[in-house]
Amino acid sequence: MHEMIDEIDAWLARGERVAVATVVKTMGSSPRLVGAKMIVSSGGSMAGSVSGGCIEGVVFGACQKALQTGEARLLHFGVADEEAWEVGLACGGEIDVFVEPLR
Image 1 (spheres, rainbow, N blue to C red):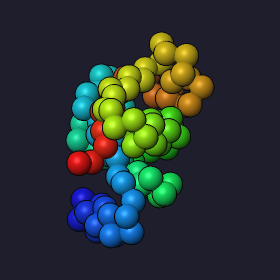
Image 2 (cartoon, rainbow, N blue to C red):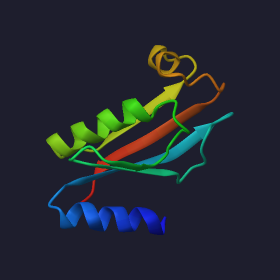
Image 3 (tube, helix red, strand yellow):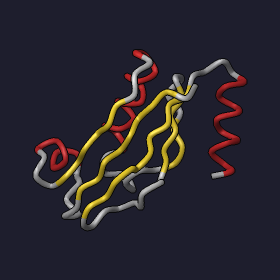
Image 4 (tube, rainbow, N blue to C red):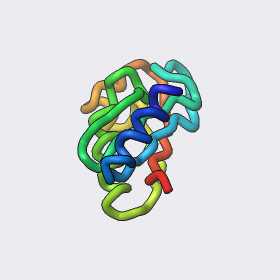
């Protein structure tokens, strides 16, 4: 977590905005535990992980949208969701990720 704080400080010092994605709920098998975080800068940098790679692209896009709109959003991924299969979440579980701009 300390490394993420350093990244956030560096991004803010460059005048970039930051969004935070946090795993808030898991059901069944999931690649990361509740509390796992990923941070994204308005300049396109990323640190951390919410899934070990299978949904990071979608979450990155949601972070960029949150930075544009200023609105938080709850994302849900599960094997029954078509989007989850498309991004590779085939671990058999479900995961909820809360995306918010850092204020």
